[in-house]
Length: 197
Image 1 (cartoon, helix red, strand yellow):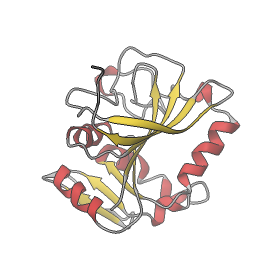
Image 2 (cartoon, rainbow, N blue to C red):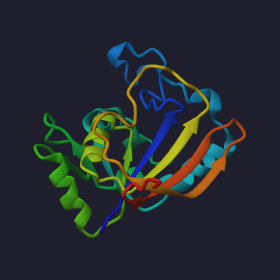
Image 3 (cartoon, helix red, strand yellow):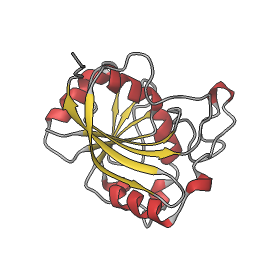
């Protein structure tokens, strides 16, 4: 069985919107795009490359796919695996792409993702894809969070954990703090939430 691993840049107040650039996602009037830039350093770059070089297939939303589709086929030197990985894209409007291999998922996304999880293959990496993430969280499909937590609050924007997240317990399996204060942490699912007596 494959694991679903969510890899996200996230602020202290949980925002994941438009981390990489000012025009990445301006929905809702979001004006803080590109908020990760001041915190980049060699340590964070090394940790990112290590994750990017693991065996994986992608599970992403249509908006993320459409940002990546014109870029990554021409930048294989930066991330070779992204072009050969199967890209499972949640979309009710797209059915084809020249960027292959790509499989479009529509209708019962949670059911289709659960089926893909049961198949043999590499783990499924989720980057960005805020809308898809909410579906995965509501249907208890996420196994691991690999988060880069930035020392910044934005107050507005799309958040990783929104209404409908299923309660779950996780354990830290790895963590590191970069020189610029980014906490890179891996949380693996351990089961149900337990409380004190």
